[in-house]
Length: 228
Image (cartoon, rainbow, N blue to C red; front, side):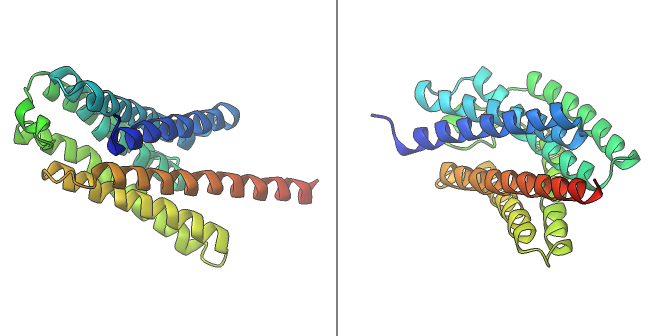
């Protein structure tokens, strides 16, 4: 019998993939870099969730956990980069892009040349790599999470007079906060509500992003109509 966590992980994988398709389609139409960075982050997120789903069915092994750990950490950096690109498309974004690429490569090599304690993983403790690998992961996830959360909050405050914009950006920020808290609890060995919080955070972010994109598109249409 399939348990609740497996179902939540499958649903999270599907939502992450749909999220990726929508944003990558936006990038192909608009050629706006923020959609590309968010798409990369969501593709990595999808890979992480799909690997986790298979682990719940077949159990973890070193290859699965190494792959999961990389994608689960690296996706946050690109999601944060997309948010930075939303408000700054100049040198800061390019510097952060370079930082993300270099740190992701270093992080990947650290994973490949280290060995996770699979016994810990099988007990539900994902803090299974040597401390320096976890530190490298944190150097990607912490800045990414901070950018994602605070830029969403900044956008919500800046557009507070518009109830729709305030709501959508607040949903994104809340989803990112839940993600960050869930990740921290998981790395500390507490996975009691991991799958529930992961699914909830993803749904909140998906709802906020989707409605925000739709809302901004309507504004652009109205502006174009007014100018014509």
